[in-house]
Length: 334
Image 1 (cartoon, one colour):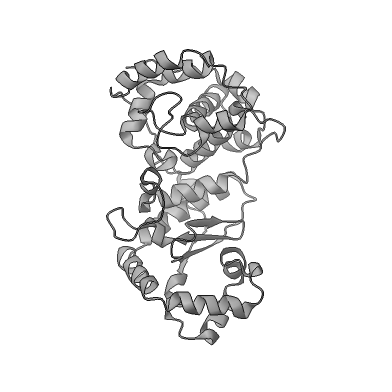
Image 2: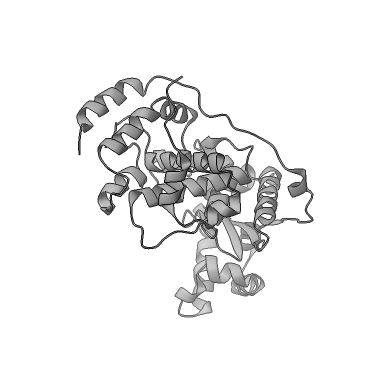
């Protein structure tokens, strides 16, 4: 790869400079909000922790078959009795009960998340009429599962979203754990849902294809949640977003000079797309997943310049076409 050393030195110096980021436009379409659609979030952890014996758990497993199958993964057990036995043991564990008590205090009022999620699902239904509203549950998994999103249900593992100051924390690197706050719940759900509309070319295994895939996912989430800060969509701090825009020309130069867009080596692709505290191929002060962020900018330019609707964007599997027709150029520092 060319000129990495010189570029890294430059970026290490100027990534500490600040710059204004792109403006967020916030408007909730009344036509979307006026749809006759109600979303109720069922707090399943309450029912499960109130269960006293095996018969109570058997009743709950039968009452919520989608949850039993998709979240508790009943098919992995030799019998329903073995699943029930595990649940009894887990929910009688003193640490689990303390964890649940903490969740009940922290999320006693869940109405704000419920309203945000309802509006988001309304927006998805508006743009994609074939979308069926899933059932929505919360649960306390003992940090076994943060979020499950299928066509039939959404399950939010609330223990993952306790504040960073709480004594109970998931076993995750700090740079990832910082994204498990209440404000991230709905954006994470919407981004997960975007995958069912995000058409791709399975034969295209280039870095560009992956950049465009994530760019479409983040654009989808922003379109559905126009009043949500980019911070909660991509998981960068406001400072990281500002600094990335301040250095967009240098980031793009790195991709171009090292001929990365058509790279197919998974190891090389991971350097720019995978979870990491920083993108060290560029700079140790550059945030991780910079390829995803860059892909988002390219997709935004494509939608703006080509006046493409959200359904048209998501249905387009041609990453090369999106890139070429985006007219993408990095913004010069302000």
